[in-house]
Length: 441
Ligand SMILES: Cc1ncc(COP(=O)(O)O)c(C=O)c1O
Figure 1 (tube, protein in one colour):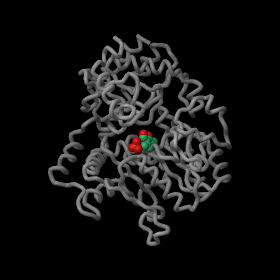
Figure 2 (cartoon, protein in one colour; figure 1 turned 90 degrees about the vertical axis):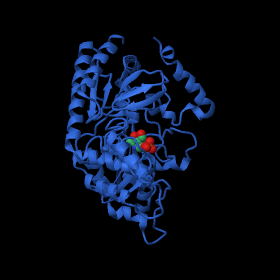
Figure 3 (cartoon, helix red, strand yellow; figure 1 turned 180 degrees about the vertical axis):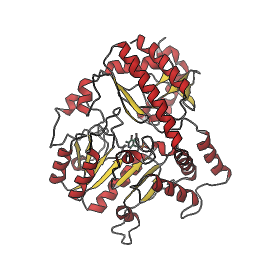
Figure 4 (cartoon, protein in one colour; figure 1 turned 30 degrees about the horizontal axis):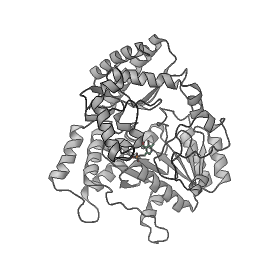
């Protein structure tokens, strides 16, 4: 059955939405084909308005590490409401103190934190802090990375090879904006270099007054591209040698990779880090944190040196309670062990099915984050990915999975996410459905 026939109610709701919401959804990254309107999510399952149920690996772009509507997290949220905890009075409160404590205990590089609402906000604050700390304005970002929607970071995540040109080293790529309306000055001060290429970072550090190097430790917005051995430590060392701030954007990797973030997996300490998504298992919360020497600029006694941190909804009790409950659950190592077991079961099963099918495909993973690349090897950078991945086949695969009750966002090379809520049987059902799906592509 074609998707339009399968999703008649979805189609009607989408048309109604577009009458009032510009573009028909509140984040246009969510507009995909097939255009399915979902109504509920519980555990690892999501249901659309037609009543079709799917085993979910999209996890709403990553946050639901414990699954949708985790009971412990939801109960913590309900308690804050029952206890009349709203945005009360002024000053601090017990919830934000507890969350900050948990964060600093979990991630060794966090000496001080601030709590905001989204990953993009956290990134914005981190960049501004680094500019204030160094007195410089230029920024280095990675090709194939995504760091939110702010003017400084809003470049094309997956441009075409034609737009990109050939691979360059000891050089930068053009800033290809991902949006209209970005001031030229921002584009001029942002330098995009290839991931896994320390030589290019060093060249930019020598060429420009660089305030910060900002990177996802694992590129998880173009599937899963892992850092090479020593790369992340090399970035921190280069920043130290050139007086720049090294910022890890752990919005996707944080807490999904490990309780200490991906940085704890490699035992590397960036100067600043930002977190979001899995930290509150689906409630809106962002974190910025790191070295006290830098974070103290948020409360510097000299107003000329002070960096503004403000936000009506920062550390809102509902979201803060959700984050506390999430981190308290993640403190139990058995939670990570279970997610790891399920992930392994899935990856091994998929590898077998793909080999049986006889098409070139590999699985790249970082803990519970994974991507099936329809290519002969795991890509090591964006050029490699763009040159070798069979995009039309990837889209066909995702569509076939949806027809068989498995939901991955139908965009080629987007990360899949396993959660604590996926049971052994759910993975078994997923593999059976995948076998069927593969027959049709
Ligand atoms: C690595 C990374 N950084 C930052 C962001 C922005 O976070 P938010 O969407 O919460 O603003 C995202 C969102 O996908 C992300 O993947």
